Length: 240
Ligand code: HEC
Ligand code: HEC
Image 1 (cartoon, rainbow, N blue to C red):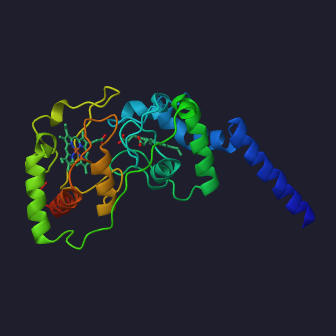
Image 2 (cartoon, rainbow, N blue to C red; image 1 turned 90 degrees about the vertical axis):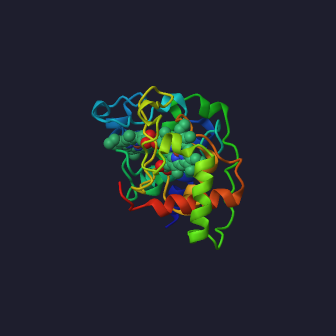
Image 3 (cartoon, helix red, strand yellow; image 1 turned 120 degrees about the vertical axis):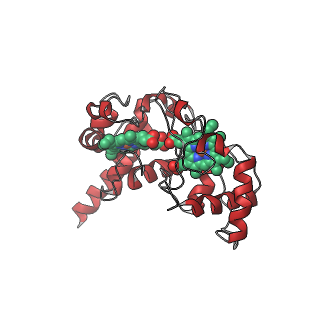
């Protein structure tokens, strides 16, 4: 028992040491080389062997730019955001979910992927966008009608289409900041990278999608944003 306690102390000390020296626990690199390298590449540049086959390209970690996060445009994501991406995957893309990977390993892989960009050493993530409590009117017919107007008045249709099917006039020509084609989301499918709950959608609409042409709509009133969400959710399952 004493031995175990001593061992624990050494392990805890070692972890603290890693945290302070910026060194990477081997487990993070090992997990990366086992699970992530095939898509994200040995250099973290998104050029793994499997990447050529994918239309939606794996993230290039050397750029330090992340799309799906709780922080404002221009800010690094929080560890919680990266944890969410790794645990839940990015539905609608090839990025798998790793809910069964032990939490320690997921944390270690996050430390490792931060070695690919210098931004991590220089910048701290800004505070996350605050999501207010879910209002009672969410998904009500009145909220859907109001949301349809907010959608029409804020130019969503130019990219996402009048019907919300992702086929707006600009859709075929949009690129992300890495020069890869990127399609606006089809709301009729109802599949969202950063989660499809009202709370997830409130966050995404407020932050925008960094590195993609999806702007931030954080300037809209909270009610407008919730009504928009009622409208988007009402489209799910509609004619594709
Ligand atoms: C089968 C290919 C594949 C594998 C394996 C894979 N990824 Fe990804 N990953 C992707 C793709 C594709 C994207 C970009 C999706 C998009 O932009 O819509 C991505 C994006 C990401 C992002 C960026 C999310 C953002 O906000 O921009 C992170 C972080 C990430 N992956 C971590 C990992 C980690 C860690 C592993 C291993 C445990 C891993 N990925 C394994 C394909 C993969
Ligand atoms: C200039 C084009 C453009 C406009 C305008 C635009 N979007 Fe987008 N939107 C995109 C693109 C492109 C994506 C996909 C980003 C990606 O996957 O990298 C997207 C993605 C989304 C997503 C999905 C994020 C996820 O987690 O999968 C939501 C929700 C969304 N947009 C809502 C809206 C709403 C609501 C409006 C109007 C208030 C709007 N967008 C206006 C281009 C646009």
